[in-house]
Length: 209
Image (cartoon, rainbow, N blue to C red; front, side, top):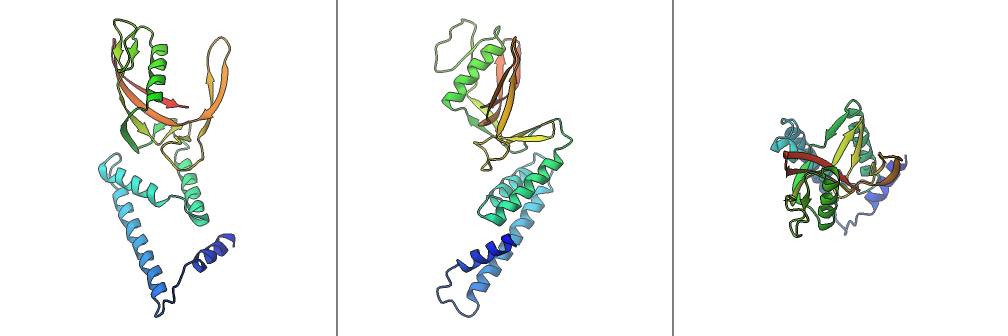
């Protein structure tokens, strides 16, 4: 009953401004039809093949529609997240279909260069605005492809810079070594970088924490 009472409170908060002749009711009725038509458009676009323009447009529209603006909307968003979690239960690894290309921030760009040099010491890279330390160093790509979330062993991990929800942002990471390090942090970005190294083009995926 709590959600129902909250809806009553929302309805009572509307200013009628002495509207008569059912003007307020007509406003709600038109808004209801607008929501139905929008949902029908999203459903039609969502039926397109995965990664097509129509499917991606539907996901963007759905995300904008499901922004949390109150208790009832929050419950709907929670139900959607539970449905997505259930759908991802059998997946070992998958990147979100919603993605976009962008330029790395200065901090992410520098951290990426350090990470690549640590992972590939025989193929050094350098930031394009810096002087190369090694003569055979190659410039690091300025652009990457950013994802909303990644599914690992049936669980979604969201990037906080891409979504408004605060669920599934904190992760536990084990860093192997002589002594295994355990660290905890917030996932800020999930991205892909295509980088030319000395042994050819590499497609790599990272999470910035």
